[in-house]
Length: 446
Ligand SMILES: Cc1ncc(COP(=O)(O)O)c(C=O)c1O
Image (cartoon, rainbow, N blue to C red; front, side, top):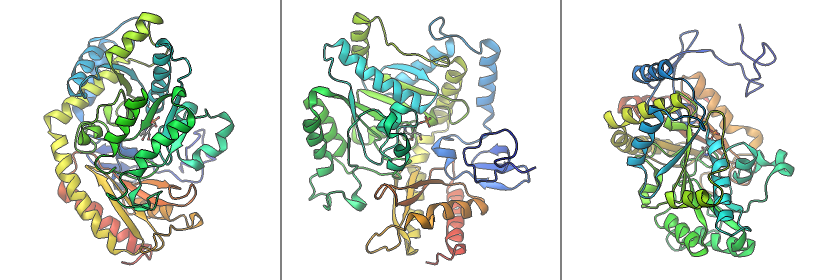
């Protein structure tokens, strides 16, 4: 049996691909029905934070399903919801204390956009509803989230449906949008936010949203020191909320519970997803401050938002089990240490003439490809360089996550490496060996 469009009834995400049938997951490995082993080098889309097949998660999920599998979020709460919120509350940055549970990253981004809007509405600032985001960012695929997402190719087909949200350039030092270099640039990329706010009219802006470390659409883009604090200061000066999208970076991925902790920044709203459940259940959250919620309670009685699967008892049981797993196995410390090792070893790939940049933090890393290392000229998109790397690595038993289009909206090639946080040093060595083999096999000699 071949799993590919147009066979069968599944509307596959990739219509031109023959899918292997995954039958088993164990730690950092996945196995298909033919017994072939793959290293899940990207944990899916940087989701599988604690590895596959962890029995204690299954056990806790079954217990919760046996007790109560579903209640509606307007009718009941459960022990799992209360306990998970309590445990998360202990690790969240100071002041972020109320957690609205949802089931996907995009859903929680929508909640954040609406929450910021409702907060200002109830505060008497009725004009404030627009959210400023960054170019080459990723915040999701639903229409509100896509309106924020700065990936040009992804937005284009749906432009007539999108909301008029302004964008500003990312802190992309490898290709500085201002042709400057750090530290002499004095963080022009952060300062430009102020220009955008002034041009758009500060009185119309509710929030600024960013990924503290750029993810799926630009590849583990770590900002320079001082960048996030400057953004925070600009937001404060204009009375604008700061939304921290930690869907990819949150829950330990970068060597801290949350990426903003690397720079001691406290946002007004935080969004989590992916690693919260490690992929075992669709789970996400929009988190904010009590004093903001109080404003909504006084005026409207609450947040006018909700989904059938919000505040899901099983999702919360899984989330709590994953959080405990990370704590007990000290995975954040391990991620910090092994992240340094991964980046060091990925650095060796710069010997290949088409590897332009290697970047990242913790176990969130990316390799950017270029046609010319000196000029940084990207490959023309028609060469489909990223896809060739991804397919060839997959054939060699390594799963990576692709990203394209971030140089100019069309060109730009990179792969993300983001294995489960349980990975050991010798398994990182295996990833590097497969990458080298892949690059050589494609005729991409170093
Ligand atoms: C930073 C970020 N925000 C939001 C999302 C959207 O999450 P989801 O795919 O669960 O809707 C993603 C997904 O990749 C993401 O990386």
